[in-house]
Image 1 (tube, rainbow, N blue to C red):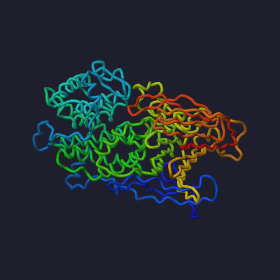
Image 2: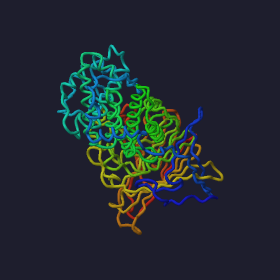
Image 3: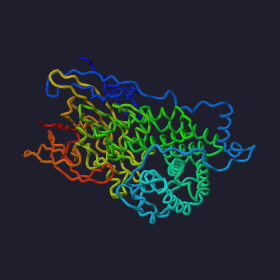
Image 4: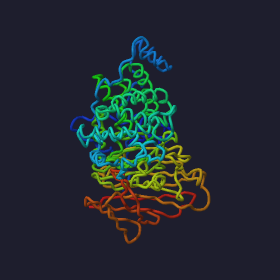
Length: 627
């Protein structure tokens, strides 16, 4: 028998403690051609007897040696310094006449848009998450605000990719110009400073500028050409002054990407490019953790960061230049954590406000990034654990929620999990908070971010971390301990064992929630145990209500056992699973799940509920495939 690492190892990330892997290492290595992702190392006699175990040996981390700007000559350093100090007119053309306004190259769009949304545009509607907004009714001046997702879609001009995907340039350009003319009429002059809302945030301005530059043929082929070139130049000068005032680090990344793209594609842009590249590298270093996850802990944020860098890379290539090594290296860091949250069908799990983004959309983004790698198995800093056993995939949130300044749709999801088999989701989280305002009503946004909207334990209907307005979060989970190991059984197949605990209920109830998940190596069984451990001796007197929620995937038919301690699950693929619990009342309730288009789907949930002593308690459960 080999002894495993101590469960109270040194911290491996902000608020995360762990054992079973070496500090700071992650599993992201190139995937050889034709090789599939291996199943998790595993092993445990799950019934009885002596159990051997072995520490999981991690692979090498795919990491940048340093987040530093490209090497510059002394003259270029001087240009960058002068630009940063505001001597931009001198840098651009102190000794000669400024160049005529034009674009130096045409960019090939690297990310095709949505043909359905593009067709809706041609029919006169913006279409997002199932909601149609007539173009004529869109409030382009930002006086009466649209829902936040629609606001980002319209004012960020990301719809240009959809329009391009659904029609030829000759068909798309007149419509794009009509919408653009109305937008310019409503927003002729930018404000002096960045706003926190509306269309003049750093995030929207940077995204809009990058969209205009990538899709320039759609907006510069007609009578608006001269005015549009002036708007592009004006946006770049506005970002020169305001890019550092972004709402968060992801917003600043959008601003820096727009600024660098303008420096590349506008004449006399060398100073702006050098200044922007330095800011971009600094922003990336602050935005991304050691294992490649963004500090927002959101798969949507991860996708947005990848998309921004992919579009910026296309701007370099339009000039037949290779992007700086730091950009491709950063993409190599960003992709493996995103893949860690994919299920067997390639679609994403529902975490931190995201939804089950479809496999095609994820695949297009990864292909455009040029990165080929396997998913991270143990992303300690980003906070997600992934275990693969044959066709079964387990995703486990083993970290505190993102810090308030990084959260856009922060969720109290600590110790929640998702489970799928052969691409069929069995246990899910509700998801969709970031799309609230579409077919998902805006009033549900905070509820979808609550602990009860995730497959985990809830005490007294209280969130493990406070859920605030505007996507922010408050006090709650501050530290999570994590232990992951492979268990080697003597008489049965092995398993991967993940144990984690959080302190989100300590201040109110004096109880630590600890969850143990054991996934058999053949993928047919997931054993779990939820423990409530008092932090002060025997704990306080009295009882508190608890509920352990298991939101079920779409299309699953359920039937409760006669003894009330089990539930049968008939999956759409014809397989049958059984859920059993060792204590508590088992009930079936309605729930909601956001599908790949961020549309609400009615589902059901298993709820194990009752009262537990403030002195602690434990609840074992089993989910097993039958036959």
